[in-house]
Length: 243
Ligand code: URA
Image (cartoon, rainbow, N blue to C red; front, side, top):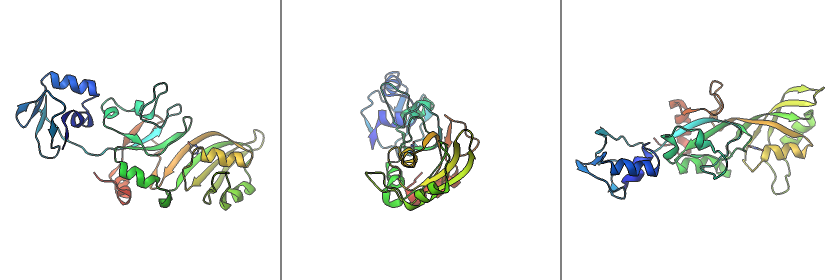
């Protein structure tokens, strides 16, 4: 059972205010009865809800794969700065989605958005050691010594990282810059940036390209998103994805 106004918001009928208006406009009928009070409890699986005469189809869970744009906070709301939720369609802004884990404001790339708290919890649980893979442009010439330091596990003061796999893609000796990929097995605040600081280098740009079984699609522009494919969903069932 859930409140009718929540059911309507979760089903993409807009913000609380918009849902209220829908109800006061006499657009909502539950089991043949016109209802204007959003606090009425309905059984989302059994009751027949019509909105402007159309049957409402309830979807409990949403799963979206986003290529996060730079300049967006990995949060659901913020009074000053745009969040990843602001990049969703109006319908999807009100269904209760949140990002699974955090990317820094300037970090781009793969971000899973869902309203399934259990899935998020499992993907982020330290004991699950879900791998996260990043591509980055580094100020500095990344060397094999750095590869070794990452592979050993690194003492960052407040914790020691799991061994991380660092791959040097390309080095530009004149500019003293390097393209790398790195795979880490935790997701501590600023972890990749802190690991490069530790070897006296700086992350100039950072993009997440993989999280567990999810890979950033090459054809998904920054700031865009799409539902998971059936194959991606299947790969997350072991982490608690339910439809
Ligand atoms: N590591 C960082 O430093 N920043 C991110 O956004 C993700 C991983």
